[in-house]
Length: 363
Image (cartoon, rainbow, N blue to C red; front, side, top):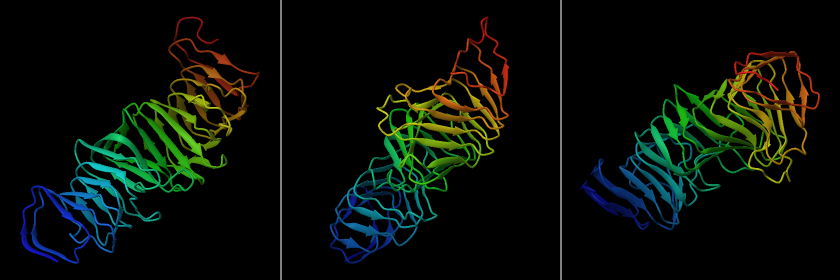
C-alpha cells in the first residue's frame, strides 16, 4: 500500500502493479508523470483520474472508473481502457503502442484541448474511437481514429479547434452516423493526405476544412456508400477512391472540392475495381479544378449523375469512361484559363460557359 499526505512529483511516479491502494491526500498537479507499467489486470487506475502527465507502458490492462483529465497522455504499451468515460488532454497526445481501448458505441470523447500541442495515434486496431479537438494541434505522426477498415466506428469532431497535418496521414475509420464533422469554425489544415474507410453505409456530416492534398474514399466491400448529411466544403482537396469501388450521394447538400478523380489517384492496379459512382442529386456544387479520370483507371466505367443540381467546374472535364446522366442540371464552365472537354458523346442538359480566359476558352 502507498499512503502519503503530500506528493511533490518532479520526475516519474511509477506504479508497477504490486500496489493494492494508493492514498495521497495532496497530489502534485502541475509537474511530473505518473506511469503505469504493471503486467496484471487492474479494475481501476489506483492513482485516480486527475494527472499532470500520464503514461501507460506495461503489458497489463487498466480499466478506468471515472472521467480523466491530464496534461500529456502517452500510451506505448498495455491496455488502458477508458470505456465510455470522457478524457480531456490539455497537452500532447500520443498512442504509439499497446492496445488502447474506448467503447465502440459510447457517446463521450477524448477531448484535445491544448494550445500548440502535438497529436499522433499510430496503432491499427487500437486507436481512439471518438476524438474532439477544441485546441490547436499538429500531427507528429500518422493520426488514426476508429477501429480498422473492416469494422469502422470512429468520429473526429473538430469543435472550434485546429488539426494541422502536413507530413503525415490521417486515417479515419468512420462510424455509420458520420466520421468527420467540423463545428464552430473548426478546421483541418496542412498538405497531408486523409483516408476515409467505411464498412457500412455512412453519413458525411457538415464539414469545412482548408486542408490541401488528397481525400481518399474507401469502401470495404465496394458496395457501401457515403451520403452527405450537410454541406461539405473542402476547396483545396482532391477526391478519389482508394482501391475499392465507392458511391457518393450528395443528397440535397452542397459539395465543394478541388479536383474529382474518377478512380484511384495513386495509380493502383484496379484489382478491386476503384470505380467512383457520384450522384449529385440537387444542390450547388463547385469543382475548383478538374473533373477527370485518375491514372490507370481508363478501363472502368464510372458513374456521374448530375441530377437537378447546379455544378460549377473551373478546370478540365474528362467523361471518356464515365456513364453520365445529365438529369435537369446546369453545368457552368467558369475557369480563368483554357478548359478542355473530353467525352464519348455524353450529353449535358444545360451548359453555360462563363470562362474569362483569352480565346479559345473551351476546347
